[in-house]
Length: 136
Image (cartoon, rainbow, N blue to C red; front, side):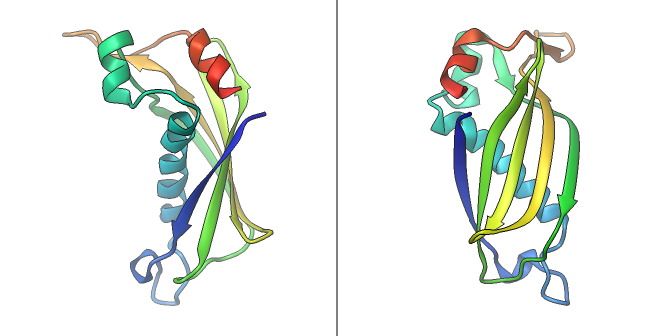
């Protein structure tokens, strides 16, 4: 299973008045790590992919997050991301937010590769084989 690491330096503004990372920031970092995963696997940026395949990106369909330990400003976090499962038109990405060897947060996102036909609605498409090959 291919895993990438996305680094995050926690800033003062990421925290609540108690100095603890405000929980939605973990979702923001997991979302950034999702895109970074594909780029580290050699998938072109979404704007380029749209020109060649019509794929506009991977909208988020569902998210589950479990928090184990807090983080605070000055911490260096590492978001470990992998594809947990590939389905016909969706996939599940697993994110493990680490501080050193401590697991702080774990999240799973269900996403789909989508196109947006002119004048139409977003449509999920089958996961392209070339993406599975580069990302597995």
